[in-house]
Image 1: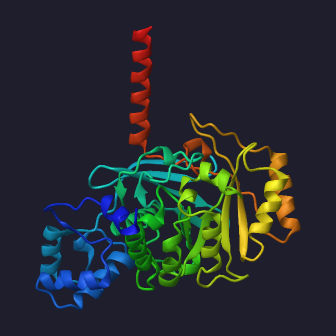
Image 2: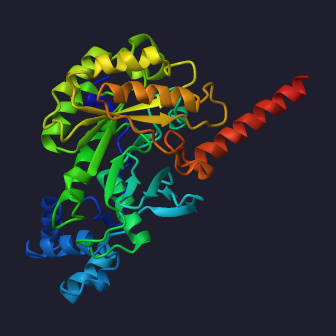
Image 3: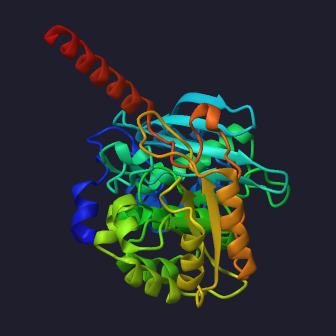
Length: 384
């Protein structure tokens, strides 16, 4: 399946009628919109400022716009975010939102506070198409791609919740964005790129590209374009050091095997020792956690500016995997460090609210699975 066919097959639902959704509009689109409403084009700059710098959702509060224009906007457009269905806070401070989209589909976004930064994990699709065996999100079928406004709306919603409007210059609680939520960002590249460009605009949300990381399972044809057009940090979900094991864990590897993936990493624009690619490696007991695996990983990455995030596996109901032992993880990390590969072990966050890496799955899908499981159990009982 080509990138274009994948994107079109799972495109966001286009609303028929109703107000025009302004969040996610580029400068050019806002310019065309205000002109269609009979306003001079410079109004678009004012509207952009209210939307993306002040985070204003009420047109009545956009005081630099003419009163008549504000009134007409209220009847023709909306600056709403996704609706927050649930807002959970973990014992470690991690915060997870379940968000309802206009067509009632749901996605999750996670905020991870740390002493020196705060990171928001953003979703790019409803569900996922990749079916990585260790990932709970991968057990949820892909429903559709998110629009640029739905991607951007997650960031703006988090800013709402954290009280960070207007866009602060210093002292931000939300400092970093990672495209590591539900879905494969490079299978929804156009919408993700559009959203991130607005997020990086100095007169928009004002995030530095150095503070944004896009994580991919290895959609090789899109990696070069991502680097050239966005220049954000790249993270690669690796998880194995042989094609045989990675074919099983990350089925996308059958299409883009390790050699092709690592060649694309070497060619990623702008990488150097100061700006390395992050390789994510979930530690699975008896699968990919041996000292031999660690030594092979060193060999594979020997000529790539890289660091490795070792991720203790976060279990979920029904999984076939267990987390590698602390001793195996420590030994693995020591081997990488001995060969000058940075290999921090990620501290699991938000496990008690199913917000940790690989655990995201919209609540409607969890409920549907519980209903299916209950129905299957009842059928078995009746048969018996």
